[in-house]
Length: 248
Image (cartoon, rainbow, N blue to C red; front, top):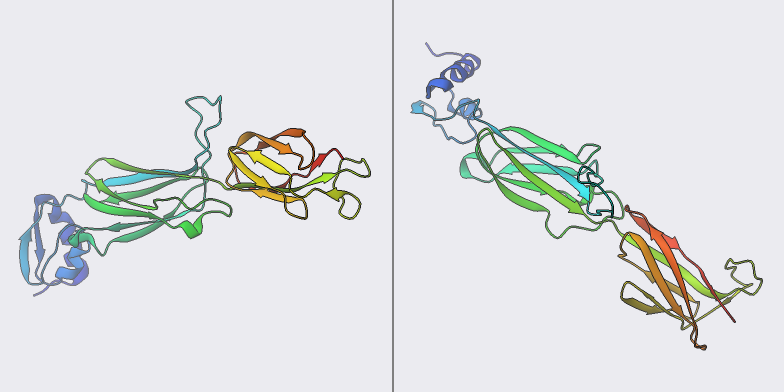
């Protein structure tokens, strides 16, 4: 008399500790409990799989900015809601796949993993807006019994500024199109990058660093310069407008 498949699976779990597993009726169902073994129906095989001998993969997705003056205990800003996929890469575990999303502090965990090699992939499309695509989004890790493998990924926010260099005709300190005079050909330097304003006095810089950022502006027709200092936050800065008045 053959046992129903549900009873067989329960019996398999109890026999796993002894290393002898019966797969006489449904090798496929039994194999689902053994990520690192392959069973054929109608055979009795010996397995070294131990249900308690499992490992895990833990890690964080975080902002790569490490502000000056932080203590050792201060953790970088985590990024939540990032999708991660773990997949078995060995022939005996190639059908194993699981998904998780990073928590509020950027942490994630894949637990109850059988020993072996796994690929961990971060899905770039799940990053919040205005973060740079990391160069490497996938790694292969060895998971060992009773051990935690770690995968941490630093993601860089995008920071950009735009604006107009102008002569403040009405003296109010603000650029007003049609009232103030835009300055074309002004040279602006920041963090080793140099650009010139276009015919509308406009300029832009991208991929800037966080913290204090200095801009040096040179008038196109006078031997004079203007220096201003900005503070850019640790997170993304999306096209912050910085209009710069210069003398006539």
